[in-house]
Length: 64
Image (cartoon, rainbow, N blue to C red; front, side):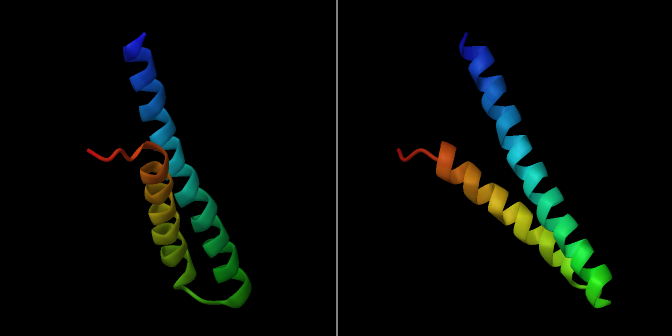
C-alpha cells in the first residue's frame, strides 16, 4: 500500500509541474499573440514552473 501512495504522490507532483507550465505558458502565448510581443511565453513557462515547485514544496515539503 505504501508503494501505491508514493506513486500517487509522484504523479501528483508531475501534474503540478506540467499544469503550471501549460497554464501559464499558454496564457503567455496568448498574450504574446494579442500584444505582438515575444517575451511573455518564456516568462509564463518559468513562472508556471516556479508556481508548480512552490505548490509541491507547500504540500509535500517536510521539516526534519
